[in-house]
Length: 560
Image 1 (cartoon, rainbow, N blue to C red):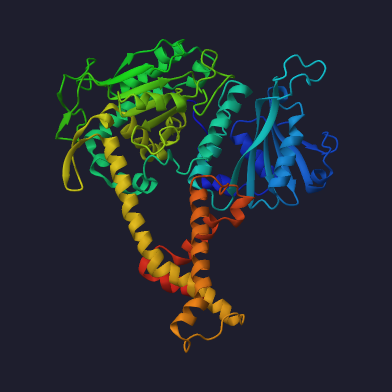
Image 2: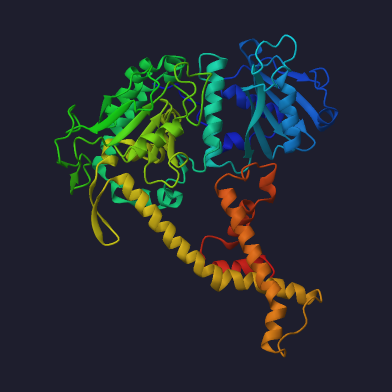
């Protein structure tokens, strides 16, 4: 079995109101808190005077493996992005290899900051290398903060999930730090159980799909329960077993068994040590849940129990292609730290080449821990994907598994790739489950776009234009225009028309940038305070959940 984390509740977070409460919290999570130590910033070697002035109390709460991993509480006059970055830089030169910081100024909001170390090449002009530096591009150790901001009174589901993964369950501090890093990766997700990078519609996945017949089918629930038990057994101690192991071992002992649980027959294509841009596996469906042979040619019956229609699949064509990497490898670029055989390979670039070949419409990319789906239909084949951290998902408490695991099972099993007859926009077409999700997501986006366009021109534009005109009249910048000729009225109002358009386009630009994480909308102490995302949440809270009552409640909450 997987090492179980502490069963964290909202009450555990609510109680984090003091130094002693935080120490007790980390003790519950399995950290050694018997040698707490109050420190002084100057004695620790902090040289930044502004930082030292900002610190009101600093204390080591826990220490593991002789100081390899330590937890520090830092009370500040004010928690800001500037102070956080200065503090992280100050820890760069300390002897603590893996510092985990808890920052607060009032114990209402707590910032859990993991100091992540990374290597980057030092670029030195040719002939100007400093004395004693043999390689002008020698790697330099940098640090960056991984930040999780938690409202003590209202922790969200993602925050609870990440804090739960703080539990010290690993064999040593190195493995525990890797576990913490993966937990922070989950913190960057927009949804609690999956990371959808514009491949599907988030709304459709979270709202429509769980209400579908397929999601609730009893036979599917039984198959999913069996698969969960098998996968949980496969992932028992996976981090310790497969970290730093060669790709061949990860493929044989983990990835191939997982693919078989999912209903695939994985056909190896590329040797583990090959560097060519070819898939590691071609994935075919088995003839039945218990079979091991590919499905018969041309016409096959769907292995999805809840689909009674015939599935069409040319047996010579794989359901999907699969790229397999060593445990924990970076899937967004090069990885010289973990990947010895193919460190320069960029999985995103390779998957684009595979999908362009036309051999399959879908590709699975995995490092054992993280599983991704890529589609040939995506607008950006390299950056649009759907992702699940399977290790994290399997380690969730029982109360969350029922909601979380379907987002892996329904998307990655072989049945999800099998085309079946489906009715789309009144037309019956052979589509697999994943293709139907893409189609439904696009249809929802079109409908939403039409509704939005209508609202913009019929409600939103006039509302903003009226606001500008009311302000201009109150400021004496616009005279009464009712009695003026039409041409004169148009001349006076034209700047307000242009200004409203400019204002709307700027709003749309910011909304798009925030939704795509091009702006740090989740930086709780920084940009988030001024973001449109925060303003949207405030307005939505005032409007309430009942649509008919929203206009009146907004009118009561805000002036015109």
